[in-house]
Image 1: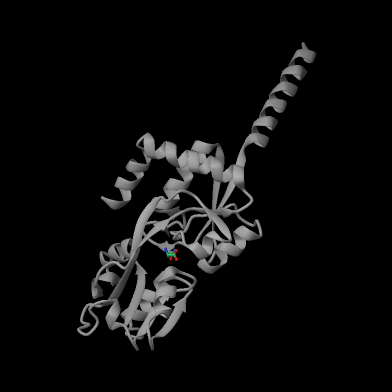
Image 2 (image 1 turned 90 degrees about the vertical axis):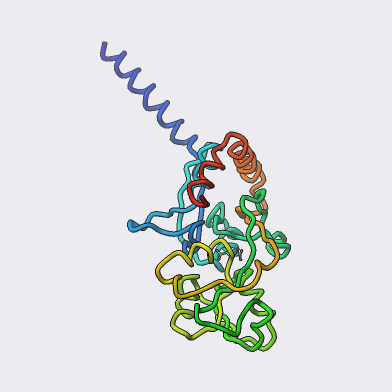
Length: 243
Ligand code: GLN
């Protein structure tokens, strides 16, 4: 009898050990000042469209998703040094970035927008920014676009929240940030003191970024994204954050 119990015990242990070993961890990083894509709730948990999407993709592909916070300009270096497996941070698929990381298929189409204080009368769009003080987030396409403005005094902050605070307190004339994030911000109490001006600058597509050598993972995650787009799960998550 004792022997049978010992045998059952050994079997159970062996089975649970293999299933633990089979649970692959996906180390995701994000810079969470980018609502409604990635931000933190009152308990410090990561929430938003892209957070739910990457969790669903990981689950679909058989990974246990663990999310950590890394500054936006630290995401690509963290991928390159294999500290993380995936950057999920509203990152636009650009030619320059595609040289150093591999992006998933696009998961959202956005573009940049100019944000000013509600009482601003002289800035009606990007063309009026010459010589102005522009706040933006470091390492972003918004920073890139800000630095192309002739004579502008550009200040790049670690977070989008700081860039917007700089505008509201009157230390910057404008912020250049992603249009869906600006739209979300305008509905918050702080955002009520601001307005968006001009058209959305050229379209940008977001992708999840991976280390170039992680070929199998990239394949798995693209397959998972395609499945979620087909089975209605992507639409469900989208509707929750954008409708
Ligand atoms: N989409 C922009 C970029 O890729 C901004 C991203 C962000 O601020 N999180 O640079």
